[in-house]
Length: 340
Image (cartoon, rainbow, N blue to C red):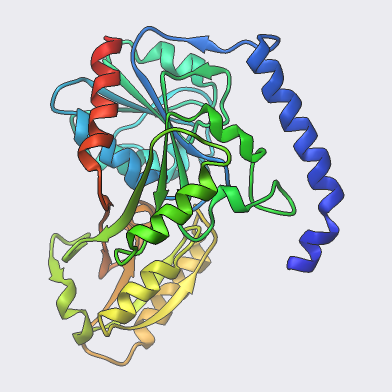
């Protein structure tokens, strides 16, 4: 795979030139960026997939929803529809995408919508005080007021290259548009020296505040039959693990640390399950020999599978800042207060 990516290096140069020209045209006003009066926070990344945008969006919702009418706008990746759609529990992932549906189900008191045309989508959400734009760092047609750039601990954008040789959607200098950078999915054991080394790599392209966060797993599994199981009891079960996310390895490692016996069926990110695949999963579950058994998935996959599989559980996750959480929160809340 690495060799093939190396052979594609000329295409990466062409891609880099095209994205650089595009960004330049937005910077100098040849291409139009629309500004809005209300506070708009864009969360995104320079690389493709798996940086932890969903838990970061949920963190911001939790931070702000008590004081403001919150809205979340996404393009609805993977949906089979077009245009502006308000998300509610009557919708399904094929109509609105799995992540927007997850936000809507989890936070009843916010407005969630999808629209591939972000300018049009924002114009429809007039009853909100604050808007979060999901996966919108490269969406230059909207000029957000605050940009949160995410980069994975073990795959920093500063060490990467543009597609298809690397995983970057644009050149590393694009990080200068961010207001903060959050290094996500850090091990909780990371020390001050390693943080300093990572900051030095990032500061070649970004001079602002840098934060470090990890994924925190919940202590209980939740299900589609209103039952809960403590994660400490997972070693008593035989588990069929089903995932359709960009990087399931941290989840595998977490389950292994819990002495969980699991068989993993892995699909691509945002996978839409076919009837045959659902049937195959049911057969694999039936074939498990233990009397105590379950199907375990991620929260994002759960919104696509909950109506199709029985004995289905998911493990909630959330973003946890390793330090300077109050500083991060203040930057967000100050921006919102000053913009209203």
